Length: 171
Figure (cartoon, rainbow, N blue to C red):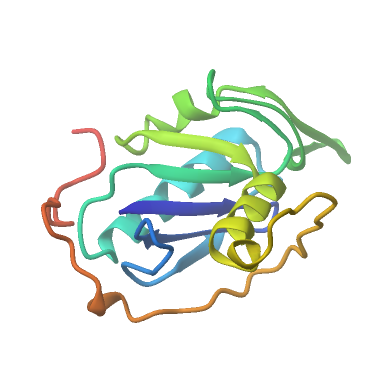
């Protein structure tokens, strides 16, 4: 089971999901504070992840985070994000070279995987949407929206997983 996170300039959404894409808990949503600076935004992401863990059926293996912009999962750095930043003196300064994973680790103690939001949306559609019914997605454009199909999370099990009561914050 994993926590899937969608970070945007306005909201951050998260939910616990099984590998087959079915939900393992309720979806949570908070303001992302995307124009309030990196620390405020990353704190909002951490808070949202912890809420998704609390709403899940078992302990997640990791959190996967979809971020708008250029993201380097290997280094954990957001190289550039046009949707996230801070307004100072009436000028919006977008994110550049933000050590996202290192900053998030101050709020959440679990492995994280980072990726570009549009790429991850297309991958999700390929894996769980129309992708299994078609052979090739070349030229595919994913309509970005927040609608998800829900499944009954109680019909899935957490065999072999730690209970969700374990604390994800650093102690």
